[in-house]
Amino acid sequence: MNEKTFEHAGPPQSARKRAALALAERMAPRRRSFIERNKSYFNDHYRYMRFLVTEGTSILDLGCGIGDLLAELRPARGVGIDSSPAMIAVARAAHPQFEFHVGDIEDAANLAKLGGPFEVIVLSDTIGGLEDIGTTLAALHPLCTAETRLIVSYYSRLWEPVLRLAEGIGAKPRQGPQNWLSTSDIEGLLALADFEVIKREWRQLTPKRLLGLGRLLNQWLGPLPGIRRFCLRNYVVARPVPTASSARPSVSVVIPCRNERGNIEAAITRMPRICDDMEILYVEGNSSDGTYQEIERVIDDHPEWTIRALKQDGRGKGDAVRKAFAAARGEVLMILDADLTMPPETLPKFYQALVSGKGEMINGTRLVYPLDPNAMRFLNLIANRTFSLMFSWLLNQRVTDTLCGTKVLSNAHYRRLAANRDYFGDFDPFGDFDLLFGATKLNLKVVEIPIRYTERSYGETQISRFSDGFLLFRMVLFAWRKLKAF
Image (cartoon, rainbow, N blue to C red; front, side):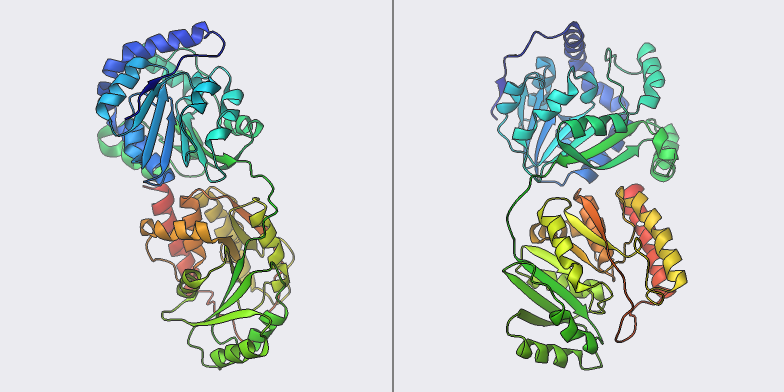
């Protein structure tokens, strides 16, 4: 592979950095044996990093050490850079399939030579040794696209006394003076460098195996609200702050419908022209009230719209959405429930939020504005508010209304989500969680838009408060296992 040693072109290195380099040089021959002695700690770290990073992407590891983390992430293209020649020599010997370079990552000239852009940039235990964190973060932008995800992993500052003690008794290699940062500190530094934080997480209540008890504590107790703030490691995922665009991408509006004959034409007559290239896809789910025949009539009566009718093969809204999204040709995908309790007139707000870069998954929320008296039953409202708290914690992003039917994302992001669906499987009859969980796994920015939720004017709700409430509870347990306790 291409191997380079970059000359340091910036100001002279400080005594602190020279001391840190000397420590790394001495540690390099013993680094792998240290990792082997602390398998529980490193395996847990690698496991969560694999959750955050999709296999087969292009990854840049800043401060890569001997390259083991890069190898664990299994990139299609992996590049590592570290200031220690001894560490890089070990990395090159162990992982010849990747590119490893010797150089100071605080020298922007070195970063410019790495051949970006990259889909993922990792700073694992690196930020603590930087002299000028803000300038270093800002220098990463030429290596990024709008889709790049920056992952900063570091020790919790609450553990500083414990880690210093571990260094003192020889249980942990000495690192010299560090920048001890909270996740809020890191978030603030990223904001100053024009990166937007998507989510934060805390992992590893204990770094030791403890005869198998450590894994159980980390898996089941460590992720709990409140307790997780005492974990050893924290993770911050960010993206470059989006820039404004004048593009008007094409749109496919998907309308799943079953026994909604009275709402089919209203969906068209109330539909705003969001952009020049726009199609409507009705997905009919074996209705008994003539819904499909009404769709055919509406297609004939409204030639000014590009409308397609799809017949659902399976059951449930989730199946209908997946069928329509697979057939959609628009660059932006939208879901509009056929009961029209979410006014179609609100769809341009969702479109603008997506194309402006404010979010990458736009979710409607019915729980901000006052509800129509008969729009949602009281028990449903209480259940929705309770589950919103649970899912905001599970997803590490604020989501106040998981079951609002209107969700918008790009076709490109949906294709990535579908390609990685194996992690969750075909588990969701609603369709909402398939999209929200998938967006979380891909580190997409979720943004909510409040809507005026109204009472339906035709037909009956497809939701059963008790059986579907039980399904919601099952979704909480499923998300806990897939997003937290792994």
